[in-house]
Image (cartoon, rainbow, N blue to C red; front, top):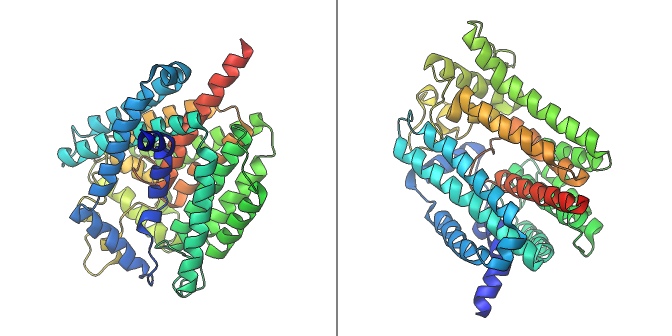
Length: 411
């Protein structure tokens, strides 16, 4: 019985530790970027995700059994319903895309796991909130990350040759993302849910200092934006979020799609130099060309059916080229378009617009800028086990909780 109570209190902590990469910490010497991308591709081919699937399935089954307890269900009824609707919505659009996917079994499998991921994350977060274990979860993760980074430095494998901190992670960007996400969670539980976090400002300072040492420019800018926005009014932050969301979807998805339909195809890849943004210019140009050439702009290739399928995409299968080891679009909006097309992106944009609009907390709204900016140079939308997607799912649940709390206060 004691084990069951502990699992109920800390099932969310298990998922968070797993997403942070602490269970697969790398204290060895880091490989080159090309080798890392190849590792990702080969990992997808070999199907090394069984542990991930097992953990999420077990926690989903357990948290579902515990959350159906009458007392829990009465208190969190609206949140539970919202989580279920969100999970079915995202799984639904992904499953629909399997109708035209060349590998419908893979698309279906990934769609179902996305459903499991959202439900397990959402239900376990509610249980952690019920038992008030969120503060100790994030505090423990802070100390784990700090110790792991120090250990990697002491072993002589904490930095790249250029002097960027990678710590226990494979790349500096991966570590930087974990540091920002943990910072966001600390801000949310302290400022929005009023948890007492010991040494809160000191912890944020240490995380930001470590972030500076990673030399990850995008991540540093994102963190500074979050700090700056959190001091502004909720109306201003919400307005900036909705404007940024609309602007980015327009630039990367809507304008290219509409210009294609009007026979004057335009996309950002035509403007950027090939080497722009660390080679992203040429990657994006190739992806937009692929969508046009194979006429997949409207519906895409199907959810999870472009990268990491065990086969190199045709447009990237260029012998002795770095294209062969590219494992993502390095842009979340373009990757959404690859998977779901213009039609699916309209749905995702609509859902996001609605969710961003109901956020009524300054700090939470400020942290919601993180997924928007991060997806300009990386792909994290709609990707299971991705740290940013994990954060976004929790942000949505937190927004709903705070929104319902506000409604109850008005009655």
